[in-house]
Length: 150
Image (cartoon, rainbow, N blue to C red):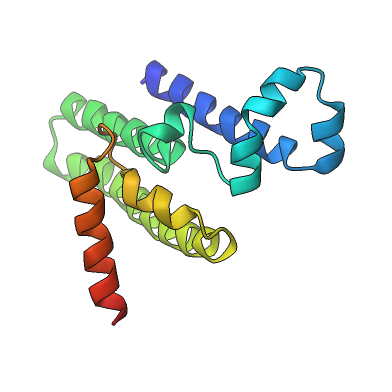
């Protein structure tokens, strides 16, 4: 659970740094110009796609969901009562469902603001960390999305 908190903090920090760099005044005054230059492509794209964001589109949300799932499992195994078990599992399950709805809204807003986000969506898993997708998988996903649009 500690590792999940550290990973969530890292993901949030990576996103915070990019948002800070998106301000033109900050980009010019950034003490580490090399760092700013390396992140310039992400600044122009409008979203983070390196670091933990390379493996999934919402690493901070995944880590938080995994944290609450682990908490529920820990609490459920510590109790002997079935009714207590339901209480310990229901709360995190509802929280996770709420986060999924939030991610859906966030993605639709981001896709509307940043056209390059579509390519990132095709290449990167949404909420489950995995290896980068192959070109065949990307082309197949693009084909499915095109058919839905038609």
